Length: 86
Image 1 (cartoon, helix red, strand yellow):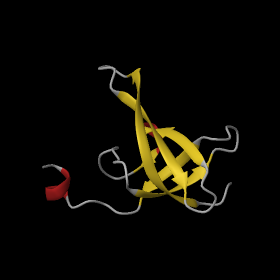
Image 2 (cartoon, rainbow, N blue to C red; image 1 turned 135 degrees about the horizontal axis):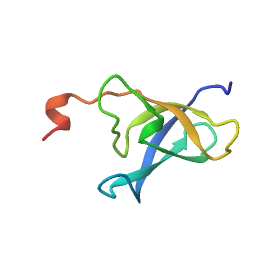
Image 3 (cartoon, rainbow, N blue to C red; image 1 turned 45 degrees about the vertical axis):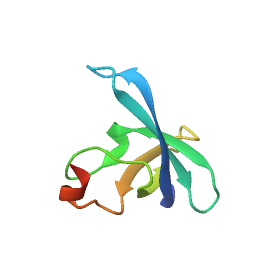
């Protein structure tokens, strides 16, 4: 298994998937080496909503079989629900 990395979500790009065509790919930039990795909502590990915002810090692994792909993405700074759902 890969070592966990830390990064910042820098972008979200729509991919046109899902029932409403609104599924997107997220881009995380590794804080250590500056590399960029992509993932989708199915790779977000959470007890609540599988959502994430640009600028949030995360911990992630790089997929062993797909370089450039993040997996097991965990949000580090959970937003206050009252701020998040304005």
